Structures are given as structure tokens and as C-alpha cells.
Image 1: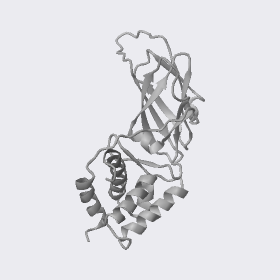
Image 2: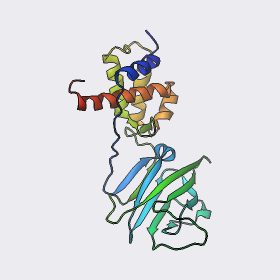
Image 3: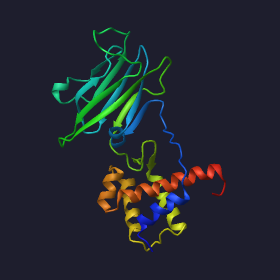
Image 4: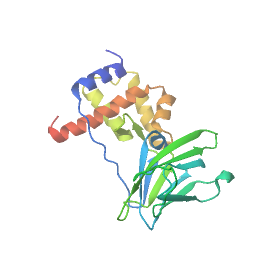
Length: 238
């Protein structure tokens, strides 16, 4: 039998060549985003006139080191403490009436760049698209969080993410369809990874490295689950 990860990649491409849309759940309070996902994507932040919208890093070990608003003519910000203190963790955004700055360009949807530094000295750069809203926003603000056990996500392409449940479902499907057997050496490693993800605050990438499973294998298992789920919506029994 071919190595599991090579076989899954090839077979999944042939059998499940369907792209499923991603629907991101949002709470009515704060929108929680895994910091690895946040650092690799452009996060939309809704802002409403007359209301302050927070972006918080206080659930991580990161402090805000630098902030840049590309178009400051419509938006101002403050932080919970001075950036020079090295202890700022939250940004508060407020919409203002448009101002005119000589030679400056403006846009209806600007972006906010935030650079942070964690306790180990690692820097991360986050890119937020600021979306003006006329009515009430769907959430209070944004919380950037460390990996939450069992709720970790992995960005597999520009538009799709996989979850821990997707990895588990993909593994079961791979075994059921004969892509691999329970004796395949990769299978117990993936099960070890799943146990690690459900009990520890580690990212999928960190867990994969810890158990020595190529991240490509994990991605393909997630794709199997997503594509199968989408296929079943179109063709019952797919």
C-alpha cells in the first residue's frame, strides 16, 4: 500500500473534487479568532458610529507594540494603556466624521495593522479590514485567543479552514474507504494528534509537529471531511 499521506492526497483529489463554502460562526458578544488564523488572514472588523469596538489580545501572552491606520480620516483609536509601557493588550476603535488631510488618500474601507510581541519575543503582524456599519454590529468586538482545546482551526487555502472534528471525520472516512488500514503507522499518530488537540492549548500545526505527522496529511484529512459533507448536501448518499 502506498504511504497514507501520498495516497490520501491523490485519491481525495480524484474523488472529492468539490469546494465547500466556509461559514464562520459569530457570537452576539465577542468574535473569538485563533491567533494563528488571525495572523495569516485579513480579519474584518465592523465599526458603528457612536460606538467603540475593541480588538483585544488579552487572552494571549501578546502585547501591542505598534498600530497603523492606513486612512485615519474616518477612524481613531485608543489603547488600554500606553504602547511604550509594553503592556497594552486592547485597541478601541471609534468612527469619526471624515477629516481632510493634505495630500492624503482616503477609502471607504481602510485597514488597521497591529504588530504584537509575545513573552518569548516573537513578533506577529495582524491585518484588519475596517468595515463601517450603519446599524448595530453583529458582535461587540474581536478577541484574539490562544488555541482553545478542541476548537482549533487550520487554514488550508485562501477560503477554507478545517477543524479538529474535520480531521477526525476525515481519518474515519479514509479508513472506511480503504485509503489506509488501522495498521498504517500514520493512523495512531493522527489519533495521538487528535487527543493532544482536545486536551491542550496547542495549534494544529504545533500538534502535527509534536507527533511527527506531515501537515499536508492533516490538511487532506480535513478536506475529505469538508468535501464529503458538501457532496452529501448535493447528492444524498454521496
